[in-house]
Image (tube, rainbow over all chains, first blue to last red; front, side, top):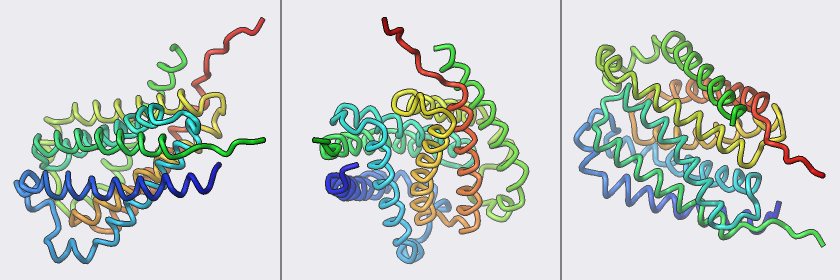
Length: 137
Length: 137
């Protein structure tokens, strides 16, 4: 484990997934989400739960970086993309289950699937490009 | 490939049965308290194939991650992978909690159930999947 590189990769990944989430799920998909308003918190309620959103992103960025460091530490961006896409598939599987039990529209499901692939594919590339294992001399 | 298929099938059967027992039986009353967030039962039944497809994708991604970076470590490596992937999922649940009016106790129940599910899945995959050994001459 290379703590300095790990920390840099984690921070950059966190910033990326937070911004991506804001733009993709919060802005680009806003109108699509509003088609089923009963599924979402009101703006004021969301504001009071905002720390959970940040903490969730922190946990996700940290464990994606950790997974990469354990998975293919010297694989580079390409291996990071592969890992990111596989992690996205875990979320996509979960999204399909959620679609069966929650009244989500197919547009929301589609947006989440594309968002997961982009988000984790790029996040994986970032981790892969930034994290390098310590070299034993 | 045979070991991969066996690991996939065994893990899929476990996740399907666990999901039914935990969400369909044990948490039934908790879901009943938040009915507006869920599809009516007949609608979920008509979309049941998405649950099966979603769980199959999730298990396939799990086994692929294990086979690519953790294979050879046996049950312990499978459990470690399961714990890491579940903590990633907990990050996603925190975000879900921030945007959806889900009761906090449901997030806790999902996370406890998810942890058990991923530990057992990791143990199953780690016990069954063995990497192909290339004969050294």
